[in-house]
Length: 331
Image (cartoon, rainbow, N blue to C red):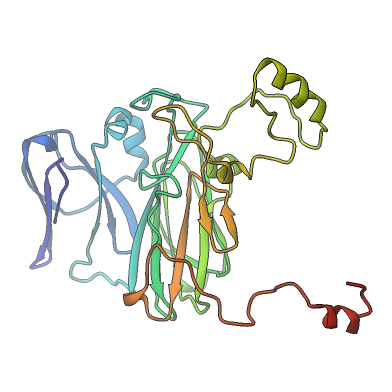
């Protein structure tokens, strides 16, 4: 059951009947996206205020929302539920079950709401409506079977979702389960617009493993376009002359924009630049569609906000003078 101001949604499963109950006037026009077994399906459950709806045969897929519900998506008239299995359905047991809904928004700097009619130049890319570092980490246990259901609500772009450090298998699509004989190990799964993929894995290596879209722009936020390329250029003289006109100004981008998160520069009101986050080895210069799969031996007591503490001797460090000399290297 959930109640977040939109309305209350309750799922019951008895005597083989899967029923969605919706309560609250604010649920008018609500659409529910449903994962059944390892499948991802969608259904408009009604344009009435409240009621009860039995799910007998779910047809279609998430792309239907894009065709007729762009305004509702922009206004958050969307929910995600995991329903099933009912009698006769087979659902492999998993220890952890997650949903990642991808979306892209056009949000001009300073605007208070996105433009639902935009078809290009999206500058805010999200997992479950949030951009990194605001995304929630996925905390799992070593050796647990983990399922991640990925639905692409983006109106124009596909998303190659990549996992660091581990591999997985694609076990389901919009059309149903993928037979075990048809699966193979992967580290990236392409999720086309208006579709879904279900992946499963058994993580064996504790640590913090990045999960993100592999489209470069999609792990950035409110990027600027149409600017001169100054990567590799020596702009010291430009800085000097520019500071005479605008004290404190500096030209950026000669080595990329990865260091922006460390500078803590002021930003315009109601904007979301790629600020990144403080990581165990420096700034994580990512934003947008980025989160972390946190694999822990004891996930129940794990700090979801804390970084993995690497055991002594498992992380490379600077060599001392004796080691350098032993290899014939002058310190």
